[in-house]
Length: 340
Image (cartoon, rainbow, N blue to C red; front, side, top):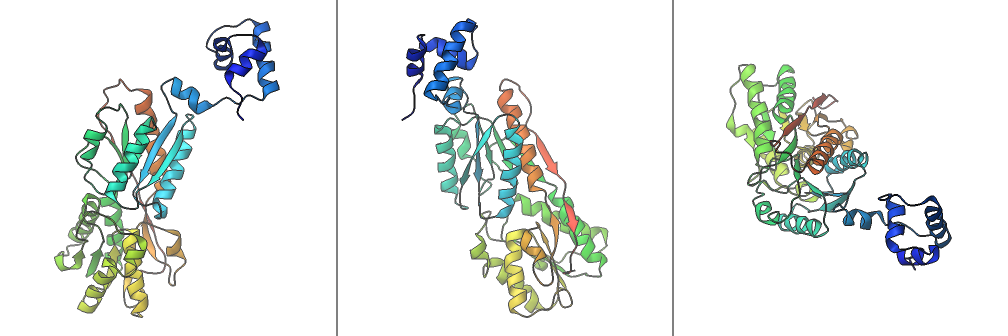
């Protein structure tokens, strides 16, 4: 059974307030009295509860990280960067998985606020974040969004250079001689719009006309799970383009979309890159394990998490500062393998 501070005070022959002053170093206490308290703490093996102490100070020292889909390794790497960044300031993270369900995201945010977290980092399941206006009405808690740009709530954001990354990837395909390149994605949101813009820019620079039939997006702004995409929309999109008999290369808009693309190409026995070149936005460990290995535009999720941790800490530490909302863009890089 846990030892209470009252038991420490009784053994030391002092008041509870004196014990608290010694443990928290909040007031000067005579050396003799201090030694009595420290001796009692050792004898009773009294364990200080840092969480309870921080709550008394009006801080939990915890930041909630609300993740759209934790089965996606991309978000796990963001969590690693976020946790490391916040640890330098004495903070920890509480990780909440939404399984790509908006109702669960709202529930998770409410639960974290009820637990008195000091801040929220959110990788939203869908772009509509109007609910935060109401949910945060009585909570002075800063928010930083990562990966996906929200609407309906203004706050700091940490995003990749999506347009530039897609531009670099598609430009490389064009330089390899491809003039008919498909762009496939299971999502239809602002992030994909930025990546499609990069696709268009690469074509424009090369003097190539964009064929709108080669661009295929999902029906909504909600991501599907990896298992759903195995034979889901990206699989079907790839089948349509391949059977159309025109495109010679496919650029997948994100890692999840690449699952359906690769699965179709494999099942249809289409040789990569001889019969179809293939590249994806988002690198993942499995892309280097396929035959052939798959080229990718690599994001830096660890850096996204690290920067998000810095921003949320600054917001927590400077609550009264009227600093404008910040958008930080993290560079991408081209990882060339054997699929192009």
